Image (cartoon, rainbow, N blue to C red; front, side, top):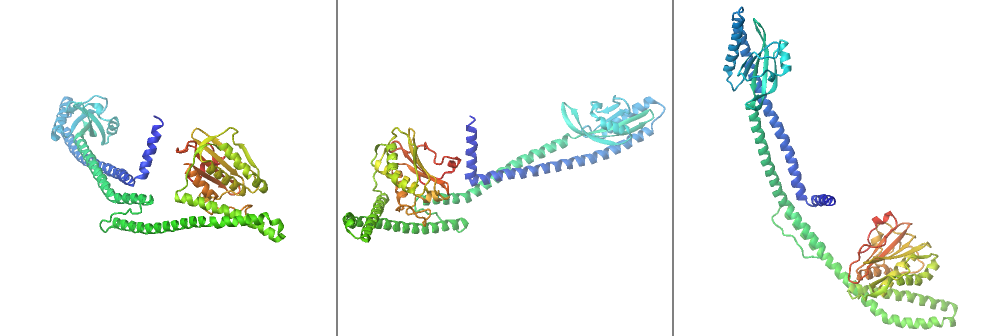
Length: 525
C-alpha cells in the first residue's frame, strides 16, 4: 500500500506533464475558482457591510427619537410619587416597543446599579443579553452601541444594541433598544447561497468552455504529434488533413510540406545507401579473384626474397604485409555487406565463453607485449561459462574488443572480466589509455570512424572492427555498451543472452566500476 501511493503520484505527475489539455483545464479551473471566490467574498462583505450600515443608521435614529420622547414624558411626570414614576417607566417601555413593532426592536429599561431588570417589552429580554462593556459605557453617562447575540424561540440571532442613561426623579436608569438582525442575516445567507450557486455554475461553464476550446486546439496538435510519430517510425506516406484556412490549417500544410521534403530526402539517401552497399559488395566480390592471384604471386616472391637484392627483398616483405592488410579489409567489407543485405546467419551452439575469452587474449598477447601492456584475466572464472552462441562470431567480437583496447592502452594494463547469471552473460574489456570524449560512446561504432584521425597506431586497423562486432552482437540478440573518459580509459561490455532467441536481462557486470557507471551511455541496443 505504501509503495502504491508514490506510484500513483508518479503516474498523476506523468499524466500532468504529458497532457497540455489537462494542464489548461485544471489551471483554468483553479484560477477561475480563485477569482470567483475572491470576488464572492468581496461582494459578500460589501453587501453585509451595507446592510449593517443602513440598519445601524436607522436604529440610531429610532433610538434618539425614543430617548427624547421618554425623557420628555419623565420630565412632565409627578416627581414626588415614586410609584407613579415606576408606573410611568413601565408605560414608556411598552409604548416605545409598540412604536416599532415587536419584529423591529425590543426595549429594556435597566436600573443604573445592580443586575436586576426594571422593565422590558417583550418581557423575555434578559439583562445578561446586554453586553457588560456596553453597560459600563452607558453607566458613564454616554450613549453607546454594540453587536451581540440573543436567544429567541430557541434560536441564536445577531442583534444591534443601543443604550443611553435615562434620568428619573427616583434615580438613574438605562434605556436600551435591541434591534434583531435576523432579517439581515437571512438576506446575507441568501446572498451567500446565490453567490455560491452562481459561482459554481459559472465555474462549470468556464471549465466546459475551456475544455471545448482546448479540444479544438489540442486535437489537431495531437493529430500532428501522432503523424510525426508515424513518420519517424518509417511511414513516409503519413500526412495531415488540411481543413480551413486558419493557423491549424497552416500547421497541417507546413507539416505535409515537411513530410514531402523528408520523404524525398530519405528516399534519395536510401537509394544512395543501396548503391553504396551494392558497390561495396560488388567490388569486394570482384576483388576476390585478382587478390587470390596476386596473393599467390606475392607468396612466391616472399618465399624467395632471400635470393633477391636487399631492396627487392624489403619490397617483397612490404608487399606481403600490405596484402595481409588488404585481405583483412576485404574480409571485413564482405562481412559488412552480408549484414547490410540481411544475409548474415547465426549458427548458435553451446559454447564456453571463458575459453573464447582466454583464447582471444592469447592471440593478442604478442601484440600486447609489443606495445608494452599487460592483459589481466583474473576476473575471468576458471570454470566453464556455457551459452548458446555462434563461436566464430563471438570470437571475432572478443578479438576486436581486445585489439581495440591494446591499440588505445598507451602501454597501460587491460582488464578483461567475464560474469554470468541464469539469463545473461557479459564480458567487459577495460583499458586505461586515451579514453573517450563525451559523445564518442555512440560514434565509436560508426564505420571507419576514429577518435583521432591523426593519431598513429602500432597496427593499422580497417576501422570496421567495432562496427562488425556490434552487428554480430545484435545478431545474437545482445548489445555492446561503451563508456570512457579522456585520459582515464574506456570500457566496452558485450552482453549476450545465455539461451538463443531470448532477450538478455540485467548485465551481471558493471560497465564502469565507479559511481560514473550510473551515467554510462549505450553504444548499442
